[in-house]
Length: 327
Image (cartoon, rainbow, N blue to C red; front, side, top):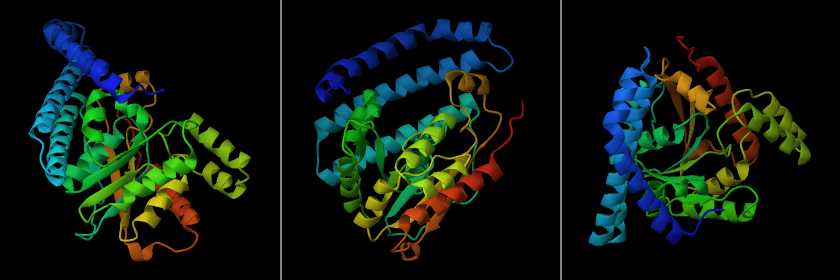
């Protein structure tokens, strides 16, 4: 159960600053330990640097958010300032990840949409930090203002709680804690106000890919009597079957929007803390591909099957492009 907003702001935000101050104060000792204990991959040293940088960036963003709240302004001015702050944060997170983790991103096909037309971005979800990278590219590389459908639990992070709640986003509660219709209606509401410079980002799978979740998803489709969908999901080894209701509601609510599909691979097999630890620094690139589908090419009928068709294409692309570890 997510604590109320005033509890999160009064407890979690001061706690973040306390942890950040303690981490900065202890950083000389932590860095010394990291150097002494470093093997040839310097894992501990890299994690210490990344953690301290992350905490410092969060504190800087929260302090700036306080200043923006005091400054006020029109709705559009406030929104533009917060988007700029979000872009600043993500650009620095990307730079820190590149320096400390060796993150390299290879884009096979850039986003080539028609300017002045909004887009609905439907992305696979796999691996740590993939959503941050996608939002970074939408905002800082392609000049789009993202509206994101994300899990409500992310509001436990004070920066996400404050910054993202001041922008047009939707936080989706866990399965079972809200009606499916309510979640779909919220996604439709978010899509309704999408503008020509905006991008609505949805992860139709509903969570990061893991083999266990894949099996559960197939069983769920079978229990629902959707045996054809279950069979198609069983033949997709690298993705979860898409949950179509939210995506199709967004498409219906924004009839002027084009569609962009996103596939990526490179960190999708990092499923546990141990996997992530052993992968540091990254010895393989994260590869991504964007497909632009003009609104005119979206079928009027059979859209659920159309969405599954695209997910099968994404699954095949991942199988063909998954980089091999150099270790």
